[in-house]
Length: 241
Image 1: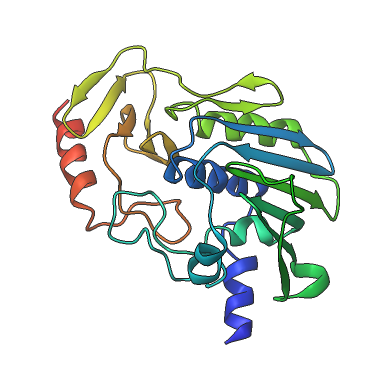
Image 2 (image 1 turned 90 degrees about the vertical axis):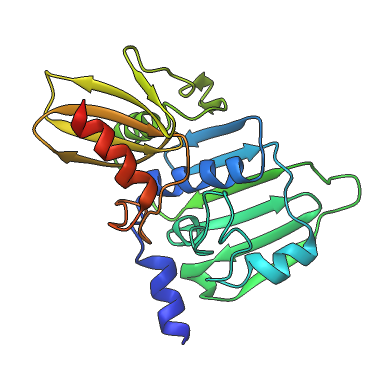
């Protein structure tokens, strides 16, 4: 139903930081080597050099929420709905290869415009230009939080000229499915799904976990499913440490 689709788009865990995180995930799934953010109070742009999408892919996968070719693969995306985090609050021009998708949820609802780029203005990869309806509040703190969320991503994530990713754990134990760092001065466990932040929860002893394999996360991507076999095995090792 259209009202359900609108809720899926507008009522996810839809902070601007979550939208940026979704863009990083999509870039990783597209085999990008670098993703660049230019962030200002009233707009931001995101550029990656991944494989992008053809017009046929957009029509078959991208414009249909809840249908993802990534499901059942080792790609991070699987729900086919994460782009709603970006569509939810802003006027969006989404360019990929020689295609342009214009979305304005608040102004035009679920309608959108899909068109070809002008001859000679095609690009490789994806560029997203987002104009906010209002100034983004507390922008510096949001950028700082997002930088923490992507600090262990394997490719450069550049924010306003600074690479905030590709950090390494200082003291770590490597197991087959994760890198783990134990901290006796902290009481919280922080979990990253192949470098992307998922959650931080109290466990009495501190640890940072960076999975090497994809974790089964919930729809909002802020928790891990109880029946995730990879995370269950990782936590057995963490508890033993």
